[in-house]
Image (cartoon, rainbow, N blue to C red; front, side, top):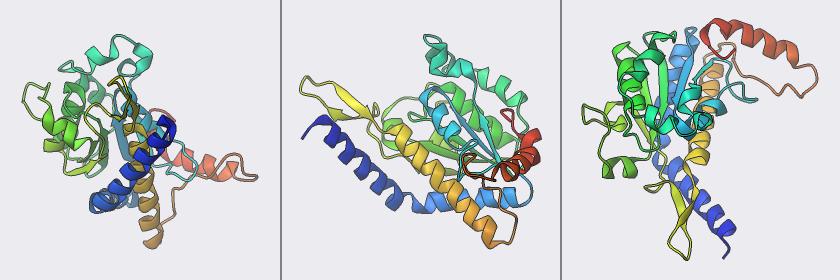
Length: 243
């Protein structure tokens, strides 16, 4: 078996575990978010490092929701190479981000952090909770439980969130061992994107079941769809820093 086929197997097994073991948590997250969106709210998603890609997965996505605010700080991504990892551990940085976001009581924020131990995602979750938001965590429970917190409180992301969704990865994220002992094949981004897309799909289904106009975006590459998307984007423009 090549590393490619082995990686494919690991991904299939990981996704199967997620959709079996995390079904109730995914449903809970979707129910909470659909209640807010039905009342005019938005779904906030925040991630640092490679987890920011999971936030982007839900933003402006064909088949996804217009009612999404992807909270991404470029300084906390790999584009700030050499500094992003240090900033992710910096106490007080999350409060700066929180002060610039329109976060409303009763809305849902999904905080994505594979390790769930660094100061910024933990403080961001605490700040959202203090503001009356429902906090959902997408994290690697095994990694988090086996690692010490880097937050002054000693707490980890999964201990703060109202809903916890395990991405079922391995500590260190890389799921394939090579003959020299090195590990490759990270799973957290694929798993996180699948979880996010499952949540937003379920939100859309619930909204439709309630008879409310669906905020689902369609592909801009399909003829005649530009006006529909434009109207949805305008509806939520003042709730998203990226629109």
